[in-house]
Image 1 (spheres, protein in one colour):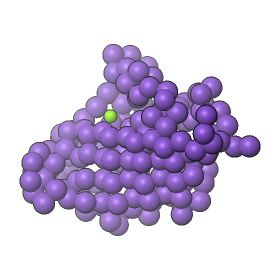
Image 2: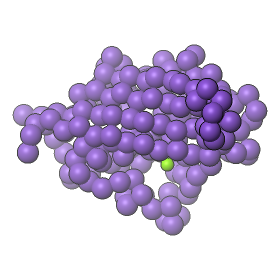
Image 3: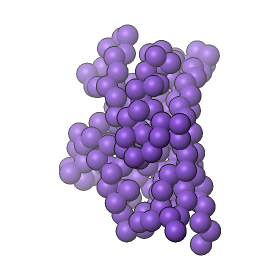
Image 4: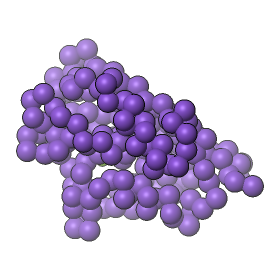
Length: 163
Ligand code: MG
């Protein structure tokens, strides 16, 4: 197996009322009081990152590891899901080289929150903040994301096997 592995992850969650908005382990405030719908805390950014990590190591996907039919994950803090993935036997010996993710959201404005999210992710991966890149885009008011009905994430990860 190559000492380098690349992984890609994608996720989308609907924005609804009566739910928290959590991105990268950070609680944000939506101007219309909306949050992300889902079985866990619906942290769509962490879910895409988890899928990127699992994808890099060909360990399946988040739905296989944490099925939404399992009440253990009801309301779960997605940081705990990521920690569980990093602790899998198949993850042993692998470390993050860098992570790059794009957050697609019409609202709220994310730029002011990116430093806190990067810090939160760097803490989870126990890596420098400079290894974590987050970019925020809108969808120019087009499609469901552009109408503010959902937030989507694309994430790419590079892993290196520790000697
Ligand atoms: Mg998800």
